[in-house]
Image 1 (cartoon, rainbow, N blue to C red):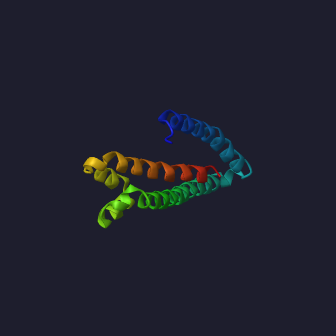
Image 2: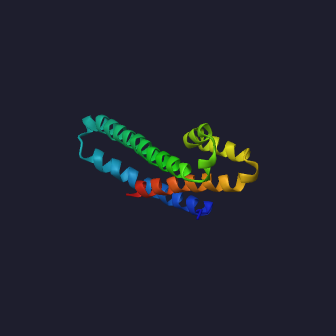
Image 3: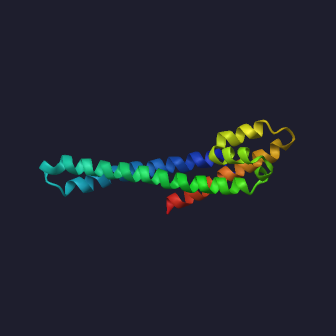
Length: 131
């Protein structure tokens, strides 16, 4: 159920290519309608909105990912762990992996729970981003 790393790299390359091919023409179309005296202001507004949009997008996608990851982890084999372990694992993938490292006999089951929770949240966040 996991996406191979090569597919992620290919998708990221296409996304970068698409952004590279659209960002410059979009900026040019915005600045071409402004008089030369207002070009600096137009450029600043364009950059500020792009930065704000990127920041807001990361925040929204991060919230979606985190809530889905935590919900899935809570309903997985991690539910047998102590409450403090579940809480810290929901807050941090690194903490969840540290728990897996100390798991002993349940190592594979807990690792699968962390990986499927992470990829489930990541997959949905990527779908939301494309919309």
